[in-house]
Amino acid sequence: MSTEKRNPAGKTLTVSGELAAFCAHLYALPSLKHGPKIPSHSLLFCFLQNVFNMVVEVPRWTNAKMEISTKEPLNPIKQDVKKGKLRFVANVFPHKGYIWNYGAIPQTWEDPSHKDENTGCCGDNDPIDVCEIGSKVCSRGEVIKVKVLGTLALIDEGETDWKVIAINVEDPDADSYNDIEDVRRMKPGYLEATVDWFRRYKVPDGKPENQFAFNGEFKGKDFALDVIKGTHEHWKALITKKTDGGEINCTNLTVSDSPFCCSQDCAKATVNAAPPCKAASPIPPEVDKWFYYQKN
Image (cartoon, rainbow, N blue to C red; front, side, top):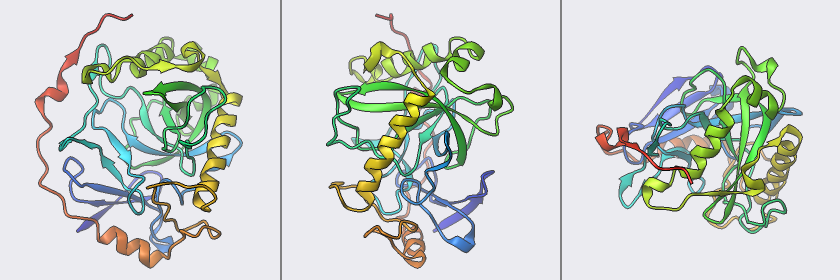
């Protein structure tokens, strides 16, 4: 059974089950007149030269590791599960959960068969990630328009994993941000905290610190736009079956020249058939634990 909620972006969120439970599915829907759309494939990629749609997977200050499930039809947002347990990101002092609204730009794909010329590593097989730095704490599943400011090249377990830095165009201060140096000037310490967060967030799980291309230096808006456009080109090859996407489910409603394009009735049936969830459980107390490490 599913329920519907409205978010500020005018999209309808169809939720199957409890978000804190196993098998919870969250779909982003536009107006009922147009039927459901999916985050990765059917939502528009770009509005203006540097304004893009962003699907919010994780609201700022929260810990649940929510992700667009690229292997399922309509790519719902779900909490990641590992070894039968729901996953939460650890609090590595001084950070609490995710320190930005975290999500992805739809209609992008970091191709795992393509070696990035900037990093020397192949893509991570996901849409390109976004760290939204505005003042509002967004809602999970919300679709917002963001202005791109720059990017960070994370090397995550040997894979290229670009992190786009952006700000909600509706933020009161959005007009004051036009490039990465504006972030450094107006939010001193935030970029350094971002590098620190991505460097150490897997350490509590027993993994080594992550590495970065460019020695962890941020690249500006123009560089970021080139990276985003490159991932969009890889997505176009994926959605038109010109490249092998492996297990990625490319079902969509809007790309007419895609062999994966489906009808609205088919999409609605997929949403309604989402599996039932187990009862929601209290968030484990260890999620609130702090981890302290000496910086290398």
